[in-house]
Image (cartoon, rainbow, N blue to C red; front, side):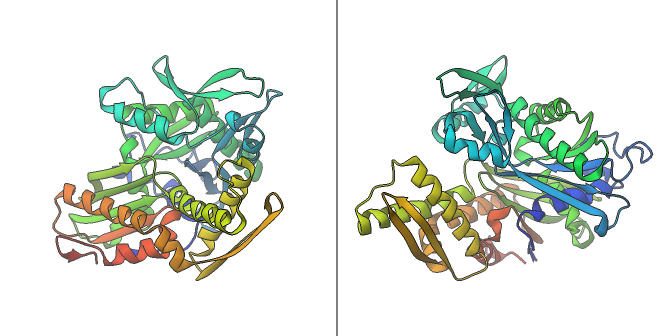
Length: 404
């Protein structure tokens, strides 16, 4: 059956948190030394971390192992470098992008453990060049992001360092909430990133952040399937599709459940597709509207575009539970105020081809897996909250057999 997510950001870490106490499910974990000794890492001393391109979350238990003892915190996955040498993380870093966009970085999760000099990653290297607003270079067999200060100086910062900065902030946030040190964590990676290089890069970044015991690295679709209890409902050799569409990454996976263990059959991955594409369509719509109604072109006005992007992202989220959203911005450009109604139908029309792209990704992954039936479809990631995505996923079919 099509599983429904009931929260926006909470969904990203609830399935991670479930795995902090699911110590008996060692078959789904990468690390063969798992589970750890509870005396060494009791509840409250181990946290779960979901590193995302848009937002990153940490979750855990204050004491005990009940839902009432759960805590969670999320931050924006941004890192910025101020002119005075300070390193900013989260909202502060995202706000710094308006001051100096060349010194504020986001979307670097997709670069973790990757290299441009590998033959099979040449296409990925070109995609990075075409889609990211900052320059990425390979240095000492690792990818680095080029950061520009206001005075024109250039600094190369390793992707592992950027990742560690976000992880350290999450660790600090958890420790402030719990009132004690946290040194152990569970991390997850997309199935596409579940190779030795990416796993090692994630563990190394965790240790740079002060998380000494980052030994359990889980694939995100397995983590989601376990936490939502699919193992209790799936028949032996049952098949599940996990569709993850976040802010900037999409991944569809097919897994089968054999002898209590999930095995990946196929995966389809797009490192530059997600909620930001839906936002961009709305932004383009209003850029044209403002040009037509007011004779003002905001396409080259960075400040105006930032205001519009924020308003459009909010409208998109509103349309997930309402039929219309008001897009209002005072003094958008040259004293022009924007106040327009956007309906869900208009939003769906603007993004029709992108929604079909999601369906095509799922159809491809199921065809590649060569399965006759799909027993469960699990949707995770903020962009799967969009009603049209859910509607299409509930009605699409593979080999003329609808998803149950």
